[in-house]
Length: 108
Image 1 (tube, rainbow, N blue to C red):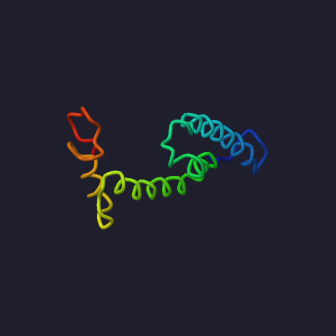
Image 2: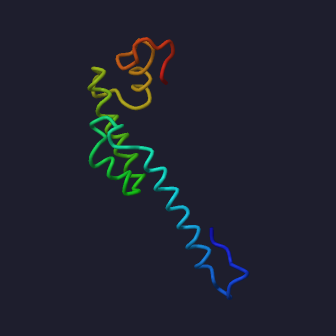
């Protein structure tokens, strides 16, 4: 939040900006602490988790999706030509090879 601080000298945007940035940093640290590396699938640990911790969230998400695109066809026994949303619906649908056993509804 960048706003002029009326009770400070003219042009003292930096004080309000610094306080807001500091609060935001604490919140980001708190949220980052909710996801621990040991909670992740082994393929997502290491460098991908490192992107998350380093606040490179775009890169982290891209790498996770790329990993899922590679792992789901292998785990479900699908041909390489199957990919994307259609593959995910097939793989995780009721009775699909990656559906949770005992589920009464699809994960997608």
